[in-house]
Amino acid sequence: MTTTPFPDGFLWGGATAANQIEGAYDADGKGLSVQDVMPKGISGPRSAEPTPDNLKLVGIDHYHRFAEDIALFAEMGFGVYRFSIAWSRIFPKGDETEPNEAGLAFYDRLLDELEKHGIEPLVTISHYETPLHLAEQYGGWTNRALIGFYERYARTLFERFGGRVKYWLTFNEINSLLHAPFMSGGIPVPEGGVPEQQLYQAMHHELVASARATRIAREVAPNAKVGCMVLSMPIYPLTPSPADAVAVMDADHGNLVYGDVHTRGAYPGYFLRTLREKGIELDVTDQDRDDLSNTVDFVSFSYYMSIAETADPSLRATGEGNIMGGVSNPTLEASEWGWQIDPVGLRLVLNQFWDRWQKPLFIVENGLGARDQLVEVDGEKTVIDDYRIAYLNDHLVQVGEAIEDGVDVLGYTSWGCIDIVSASTAQLSKRYGFIYVDRNDDGTGTLDRYRKKSFGWYADVIRTNGATLTR
Ligand code: BGP
Image (cartoon, rainbow, N blue to C red):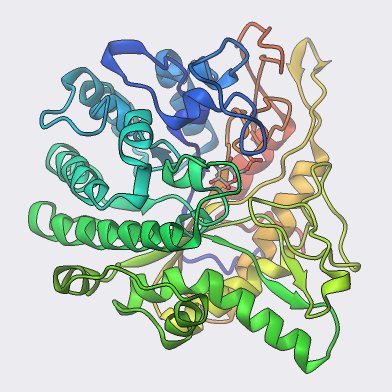
């Protein structure tokens, strides 16, 4: 007899983001977003305007092929699909008073398709897609005015879709703001970097905006569940020395503060100490404090890797990693992009978040970015991606362990369930999907879709509610 630790009703599915999948960057009145001028991802230079080498302008043309893609998700048995709404489709510049109806209509059609297949939507309101105009004219989230623009945008979404979308996320990986200011916060980065005072103020503005969105949802969409979304990364001490343990605690606090504010409604003492020691004085109004008290219904997070930390500056050469790096852990292997693979870290993070916040958790990103080789088997094009199956299997086994530990986990959406453009490097060759998309880094390809081996594997996992996972 096969058993599974996953509870009935566990939500299995996949996740994407508008700017990485939709393409159609200027269709039906859409304005430009920061992504439209980031042809090389986080590390490359900005372009003055959209350039043809920017793969996101076409993405995988999901804007025109969403019905076909959702049918494939349904074939795998998805119970949930996480996608983001492109802010600049709804408010092309970001500061208008009236939304763009054609943009809203697109998401109506997408939701129709999900409903047809009985797939629960999970919507990210802002996923690294700040309208470019807000970056250029306002300085992005450094400017308090963005709270009002975001509030109008969020209210528009709750009013229009609140009856059909239950799960909402306010900001993707909100804790990446200090590390990737332009992509994450629409903050133009001058030579020498953005002053810390402004970065922390931007962080405060986003936290207030997130809490306001939660408050608005309670008013206009009472059935909605609103969650925050953080980039999770367990941090291990490089050695057992107390100094390294403190270095870990400090680094952890830098990430945990976002979840602490979202779940407790106020800034924790360790964060106030950080501000004091940096000589930063935040502009916090009474209204802000009142807004922050609107705490979330659940906490969601991405998980790809763990890192190590040390107090020894001579060892602090930064390891490669997802937006924020750390020190490489000598006990772990890494993906081709240098992200250290650590399934057990996912169990640790689930336990840490549950112990700390006592809110239901949703794993909304996890997966392996890898190069795939398209081959022909029995006349069908496919990819034999055993490496991806192994990665996902081992991580899901650890989710099962955490559930056995008593952690309340709502669901799991694997990242880039269909191949999309990478966020950090803007490549298509960094593939995460169960579905191969024929598009290459030079922009060539038919955009045809093919089922990989992992497609059938994931369908079995979903069908058996995890009983086919191998320990
Ligand atoms: C997260 C982002 C996603 C995403 C993923 C994988 O940080 O929320 O947008 O793409 O990481 O990263 P990458 O695409 O750089 O491999």
